[in-house]
Length: 464
Image (tube, rainbow, N blue to C red; front, top):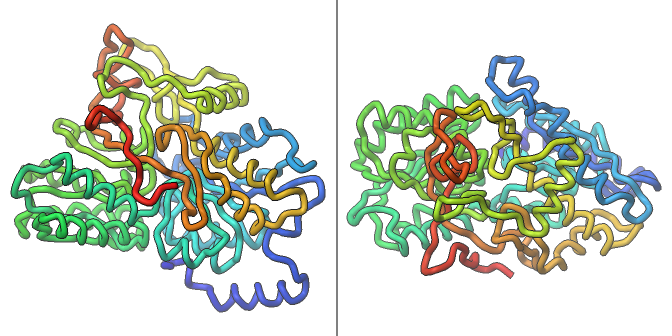
């Protein structure tokens, strides 16, 4: 699994010695009065120190606090409190993920490792396989990782392969591309992305499309190197005769491709495939270049937006979302604004809109606590995994039409998907009579859902 496999012999030997001496599974040696929970958060403070422009509110402290306030709201469970331990990784240094894995699993002995979004999928196996530690992640993985992890891995999002199949099906049914389109796929060798790209290539071909090129960016290099490869891919897909490009790369890399395509006048049709971190979330929309939002750019995803299909209002919270918002607002002593990506934003009139609550942290915490209660006080992580698989239906925030569920052979929570279209807005966009910005809840790009045959959401194939 990429970098995560650099130390398999050392890790295996250490694990064998520890198992022989202690005879307990990872995460079982918990204090009687607390559960140790490691939360993986991006080292945004380090990024800011390196000159990356990030809102002040996006800090390591606040990212960790998002978890703490949700656990605090649940109080004691099985007579125990939650000891939340933030561990950081450097998003622009691919080598940092292995160090993060070691810190999370060996420097600590957590009951579970949690991540809302952004952690590199190729490094999850270091946690769940090499170090035999239970993990729950916001973003979906890929088939081989679920299989290898066994009872150590659950996700909110769907696997990359499922995302690809749903995307191709809806792209075909809804006519995302003009007749006769020649398709190129912009993917990478990051396992989850590659798995989705491979499935997309096969499914588009089966649907009768002419797939003329698939480019895989080398993800095992720094962001600058990936961006250079993404920009160079424009000439490659042009030479192949592509008229439409299916983009699987995340927002830290894909702007290089879009910018180069714009400069060269390529005139591609685009579709984003939800296989990279946060690409089709409201945060991802805010980081996607406005140059590609001048035409309809669809994404099939389980993640939700606060914009309405009619672009004349803001989606109201469901009961669970309202509960999540109340907890977040109380914990941070502020009033969140639906649809505002992480970090506050000021519009053209000088009004500051406060960032929205973090949905994945709220959902994961809720599901984990339910699993703990079902499994009982003396449960092991494996017991909690089994208990969570019995959660057939549970409320969700900002995903899957407000509900999801696990099943025996379904270690991911998402049940439904919808089509979203990228919609442009900037801090120069004036608010309209509804207080919206070209239909967006905030003065920044957003996703606007599309209604299909009278409904917004469709069931994900194989969902419980």
